[in-house]
Amino acid sequence: GAVVSQHPSRVICKSGTSVKIECRSLDFQATTMFWYRQFPKQSLMLMATSNEGSKATYEQGVEKDKFLINHASLTLSTLTVTSAHPEDSSFYICSATPGRGISYEQYFGPGTRLTVT
Amino acid sequence: AQKVTQAQTEISVVEKEDVTLDCVYETRDTTYYLFWYKQPPSGELVFLIRRNSFDEQNEISGRYSWNFQKSTSSFNFTITASQVVDSAVYFCALSEDSMNTGFQKLVFGTGTRLLVSP
Image (cartoon, rainbow over all chains, first blue to last red; front, side):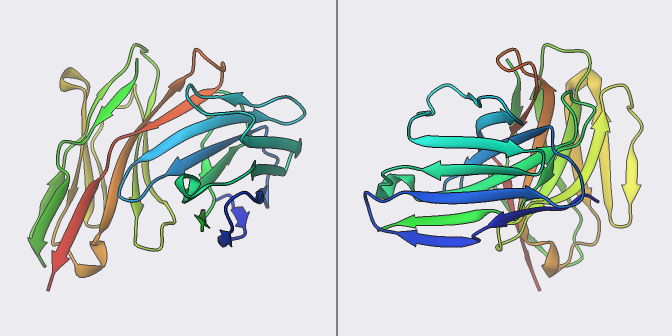
């Protein structure tokens, strides 16, 4: 199956700093990438959908100025958590798909565990 | 709006028992996909199955089997002869076209934690 990587796998940062998480599709071109957040013992919630070369579309309740998403190429999307606070501590998972519609599978990255102290 | 319900929060079984994880979904669309994922303690999602809404055939893969019934909007997952390595959180998910983005949207259930003891 297709491979999606995330970097870093774990990050600890101080409150008030920003942290960037990378999501890469290694063996296919990702037209669309998705970012999910998972709090401990909870489900995955979609944060935003991003298309290469265009602005991301955020789900209701997700602050776009806090969670900056850049889908600069067909193989790379980045999520920057700006001015992170302890409540942003979570497991962030990206996925990528080679097409737009539901017939295209989403391939998930291994996730990034963010801890804000 | 699309919704996935996994009513079982946690299930505990003893090794070699069979266990069924329930999944009920809601969708406005006639074309959609259903999924099951396994999430072990490491956190990485492991894809188990993807099922098209037009394909109601049940599927068996080794000790795993899935029962898709559109009449009851259910997509249940059975593990036969469970093993300790099956311990994980299992998520059922539904994919349909998002009215917000025009792209696909994957909605996850709340997950069922399966504990298999020796």
